[in-house]
Image (cartoon, rainbow, N blue to C red; front, side):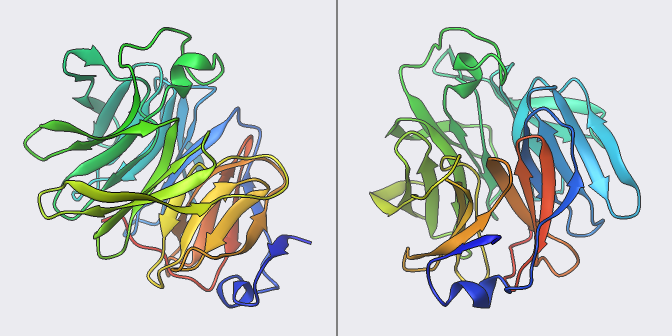
Length: 296
């Protein structure tokens, strides 16, 4: 059975006949998929092999950037440029000229090197939000073993003028994050805490009312990792067994089960109803009845 159905509402979002299709395999550790809404291609990272790839239905698989400093999460800024989190360099970077030039955006906070930026999201005001756990410093397969300079694993906001602000510092290991469709709330999950938190976003980019929104529970491999929202108000989050689907009231409707540990995902396709899932050594896709949000 490809699903762990916990509510009848699950089948309204994921048709019962939908099945996972592998579109690429043989990678080291896949992560960070993003879909270009106009040109219809996918970019994703292979952290372990320090590659980033570009895939499309028409052209198949090509290398987007190598070496990638063991890049992890990706997003598009408002101009359609790829923003990437690099584990090995502890930097947040922007790709320009089709990935041929890479520009560092954030490297240090208060004179101390960032840990290992992990996942990233951009809002309509041009602000960039990213998580900074220590995974790229404590796992040799995902980074470079080294001590960290910062005494916490935080969440940061980078403003268009280049100002870097620490907005949360009490996570064990913050990982995936997403904004609600109206950008009034920021969702961030904690891989070691096993839950999703939500915070209200003020007009000036501050965060208030930090609270646990949902626990991510189930059988199988996986922890809270990538996270996205839909136009219908669903929140999806990687977790034990696969991709967990929550409704707007934080009820888990069910899980898209994956044959390998799932790490991240994004909506794409011409109608933004195809879910592309990175899972360990492969990349999969599955058709849904939900509509994801275009990144720009």
